[in-house]
Length: 344
Ligand code: NAP
Ligand code: F7E
Image 1 (cartoon, rainbow, N blue to C red):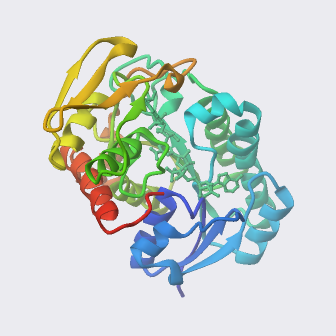
Image 2 (spheres, rainbow, N blue to C red):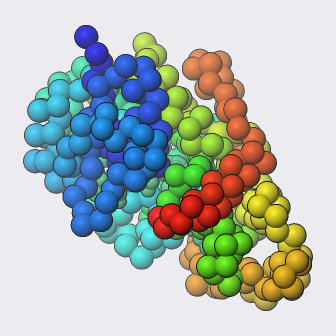
């Protein structure tokens, strides 16, 4: 019999790649989505798998809905990818973020406990938990120091996942995933904002764009690589926590340089702080400027993961380099723009 997976956050980046991965493993996929007025399946459409996922309305704020969805679907595995995942947005909506990203996860765990404690559970934890890292690189045992309402909420979700494992014997794992990007990344996140804006400028649809702090460093990987680690975690005899990363750390400015070069820009940087800007040398035009409004009240300056445990136990390793990631994303957005697609 086919294994059945329920994926929350099906309309997001990871939901799309995980569905593709599990369909290749012959799973039956139930995609839990939030009702909205705009189309939510563009990522599944682009991957050509929208017809293969059974969609179920799902809201993390509503325990009765979660309980009935899990009761009706009776999945073997639940991948909880749904979240208010925008860190900057969590400073604007801290209470909503806590309701969804913290208490919402407890609601799913509680529903599993009530409906069927044999259901395996994956929680999407995050490198944001490390905030101001106490050591470099970060491992599963590095102390947490959240720097945003988002990461504070995710810390509750992370610890309650472990607690439900210890208290009730649930097979509940948490992947501490570092930033993972792709051509399906939400357009508000910095990498996709950069590649979509550069593509639009190149096509003549946009003059310039603004960014915030371009000197923070992240450990950036390719999202398609990362979803296989989620699955591996649920195939282990014992549930556990794992850091999933590349082990390299780069600034946003480095990403810009690589992405821009891969679609033919030659950038020259001048100025400092909020007065820094980049000129497209070929056209002699300022195309990137800095605006303080994109700065965060408290920033995470640098993250870098250590994947020794994932390598050893899950046999997991990333395959896409930082350079390949920047190129892949920039080229993909430029292709979309050239083909007249609206970037979403
Ligand atoms: P994403 O693209 O922002 O997708 C988030 C998903 O959650 C969307 O499908 C969204 O639905 C859904 N959602 C939001 N609020 C919801 C609610 N109240 N009820 C039900 N669904 C809701 O995120 P992602 O990049 O795929 O990341 C997946 C998960 O991993 C998230 O939990 C994120 O916090 C975590 N994470 C991401 C990264 C990363 O670098 N990508 C790293 C570490 C951890 P709508 O389409 O309706 O908004
Ligand atoms: O910011 C800086 C910003 O919003 C990255 C989420 O998936 O990964 C993601 O969180 C960096 C920050 O991602 C702009 O200040 C500069 O230092 O792309 P981001 P994030 O905050 O790292 C983690 C692991 C998650 O768990 C989250 O769910 O880029 N930055 N200028 C900017 N960021 C944005 N968004 N926009 C700018 O204009």
